[in-house]
Image (cartoon, rainbow, N blue to C red; front, side):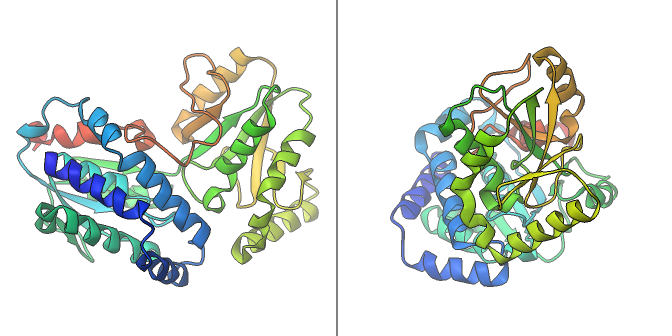
Length: 340
């Protein structure tokens, strides 16, 4: 366990040194997937280094679990998504730290970054070399973790029906604006919306605002991210959604790089964020609670009822204990001794 933690910390120190070889890696990744811009490749590495590869954070995280040294190693099949860079790295850390083996099927959209990071990690912790296997097809595994769309989840549920599993579906972040947010908080919300061009499951796709809210201050704060529209694929999506609104006479607000459309749905198109009015916080609490199966995280200045929230600007920098879909991956992995 100490070796695993030290290896992760050394990996973080490596990233902090900004090695020149990362530039070529980022170039390869962007050529493979144009959504992986240099800006957000750097953002991803920085967030992982800050939140996942810090010794103090790692030690505090593993202190939550009592039976880390009592694991009978199992092979965990892992299907990684490729919507944002290195999105599945947290699952890999969990598998390695819990003492299991990882059999990984990479996404074609992110098949440069993950192998590079795993190989570099193995340079600092030689013990993981034989514990991680990259494959084209999963077979002979004891449990599975798969992330995909609502459609693919039905296939995953069937395919992994015979083994313990975690199946993740589509989710999005939501934000709650109460009307007294500072300019800095609203700019932080911009990061929650625009990071990775809105492709992450933690990106804010919907905001709740009080009845009568004036959007001018919010749209002004979003201008900090005006360079987002310069990305060709983002602009194509923005232009398409803009045209759909015009043709279908859907009312909207815009500052030229973001569309705000009143809609009860939580998911929204790229370049678009839905909004919904609320009359009271108690009413809002009920509304949000009823839709939690579609919510990955909630960004807000203050808690709403018993619903946990995170500060503006932090949705794409989750802590080690911020598990996707609210399912504690470590508890699942550590329970496999009893379930298999």
